[in-house]
Image (tube, rainbow, N blue to C red):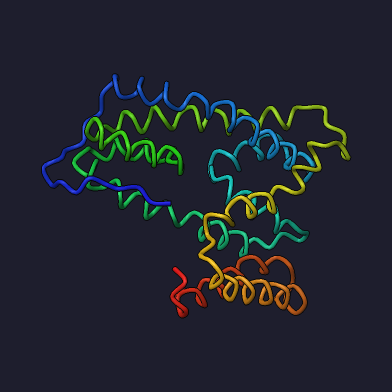
Length: 238
């Protein structure tokens, strides 16, 4: 999934209210979709026995559905804190690349303006902002406007899901338990490169199973994924 970034050194980013409104209107559908996904996450956190404040802090500070789902999949007692931190950092490392793509657009803006906006950066708001910059010129107001409904939906949905009177064996709680697997499944079609992808995927799965047997389930996803990535690099499946 790639988006072209304007490569014009003369372009300088701005921050306007008109772009904020334009981004808000374009991203309004995410207020609903992120609320639904966030509600499932809230149910999952409640099932783990977390307090509401802790659940909200997870969705606010980590603010990554993929990373949070990975952490849920690693949740065992005692908590594998080191593995969780490494997995979270590895999963969210893609935002470094997104930020690098945005730097030519908004690098001239003051840090006190752009850094708070980048805190709300999401995959969808990044793609929407790059596309809008090609049409209308780089404006960080659009990034803020597009990011706010996504963040409100995700964090508000977490609170909503936590407060819902869901039975432990109800459909939504079952969906919450399957959340890590659901996120992995949704990513698979975007990573498929034909028959050559079977080799790194198979090695990754076997490595994860070996880690579960000899080390423990906490590190399985992280080590298995890392080994699969290395095999992909060696075999040119990138």
